[in-house]
Length: 483
Image (cartoon, rainbow, N blue to C red):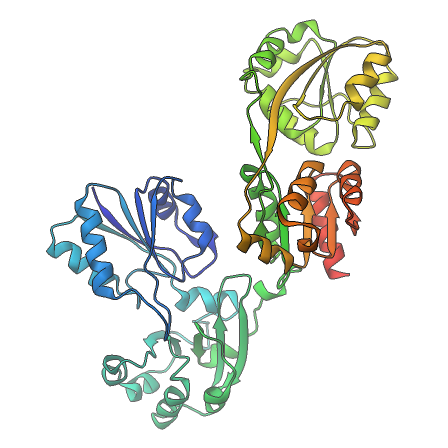
């Protein structure tokens, strides 16, 4: 087996390399830094052992010798080991020391480069480290106060070399660094940009000049860019519409990704609260499988959720099996789920609720209809169709159960700017797990049924998505938080 020294990048989980993601997905053991984004750990198998070996400035830390020992120990155990390091393993990350320890112990290792904050943090702040006509080179230097760093760096030479200077780990020594660079010939008016928590939703940046750097209120973990490029203002990350906002996403655990990705692309920090989890039907899916084998005997198939679509198509291998019947979708979101399987809904009611679907179907001559639905689905559609003379066959497609929510997640949710509810069951699940007091004041609902559930539980709905889709939900969130 091999120990993989994987660069996790500077913070944005999207900057992890494909190779890094592949290795995490099959890891048996993950040793991770404090600066690694927590969500990256979710890429490892649930059963993988996760060991925090992060270092905290002026706080408790795992000694480097202990990290080396752990890497060798787990590497010799025959398991797949990923050492997840912030930034790049070989850029001020002590990856060379870990590689030497592994080599000395005869443990095979591989280095997977990562994107260093030295270039990523400035880029996310809108500062290119090189720019035609301004800077043709950049120097990356540590500002760490350990004796080896201060004595081992020729600051006069750094000042004279020209181009851009990128200082890592130099917040505590920034005043001395500025003094040495000015003494070495750098203009005191040289522009400076400091970026901390770069590439993350909490990113902050500050502009100053070299002479004022020592007194500037620079945050910890900052990357400091010194040079004429720091005067360029190509900001994009901090200007996204939801930057600085935190949104709670409530969906089944396996479904949160799509909505979270859309919100993060708009700059929001996302707190995922998986209030429900989707579970198999009580009969193991036999009833739905039997009905799917007889699709030709139905005039209609009525689908009331994207989950029902997914469950049905576990038993339908060819969309042509639906050729003999028409398909109804309760709303655009369910219609989109059908489209992903190559099926276009024949009917999507104007109102994305069971009552709307019932009204439109009941307007047609009664026929035979299959309704795959959740175990706890509202009886409105089935009872209404039967009353209207329809021959209704119900197939249990899935069930929902409460998901456990960690206290820390509840606390984070209570401090958020808004919460997005994607179904009535997520409303009930959130209130049950966290309580109404943990719900942010800004409540966005995906549709009427979800809104009704929220109101019944004592919540005030700020906006309802129109259309009743994830895109509509994102638009409603954006309007509510930027108006």
